Image (tube, rainbow, N blue to C red; front, side):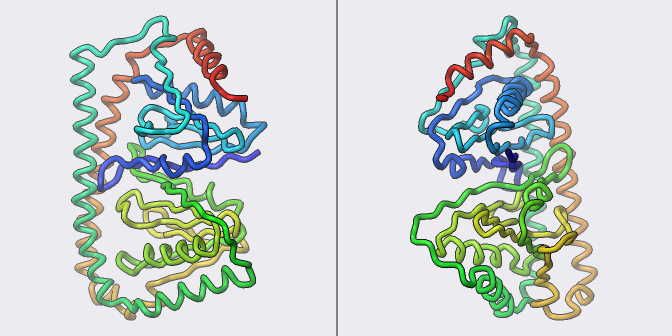
Length: 349
């Protein structure tokens, strides 16, 4: 049985984003864990993972709060999702919300002091989003440099060649398709994190897309995604956790294929057969552009990265307050067992 890891939530320049909706395709039973303690909800999710990991393929949803938390788990063969209330959407078919307070022998109420700590947590988180937003505006200046030096016809030609090679001799399917919208990483208190190695490790056809800001990497991948979808394949779109209007990865399971933005802060290089590089800077940008605009590029890079660094520091400050909140909650092994028994009873076998 396999485990797939990805994010459906992210801390971005547009604030907190939630892509759960598209990932609920075909899921008929959803259990939502409601509680202020992310630690408690993560324990329950991990217990369900342990219960089913030897029987079913699992999709494990990482949390933008940090590596010690999870957002949920999806078991498609059981048409089941167990998620935290942070992910909950207004209308999820077959959803059951479980208030975990009902099972705790000693549950903490939010006092005025704790509410103030929560306000501090929310405030620092918003400061991080503001810093990411400022960084993105500065980053746009980088894009403008390369856009003016870019041969987009050449980039389109490269995309057409890849599409032709990818879909060569593969019959077009006449069935409806679905697009799963996700992130392969995000900005967290631990820095910019990703699960790219886990996503690509079992794929036989992986392209590492190189380039600079504004060289059309996202547009290139959107073109690939559109062609694969039109050919009848479900696709996985992974959005950029810095600028969610951009695409960072297209993965097509049925084609055993993936292409992703392999530049900082998620830069990788081929290590095995079936992995190769497409470099849009080398192929489609006026030679010498880096050197010609070196001073301006370095200045813009330094400035936007300083705002990204400050945003991460804000998330770290937010986490200090989140940890204070988490430490207020206590639960016993008996509490956890009661919750799991109740959850088990709600799962349609």
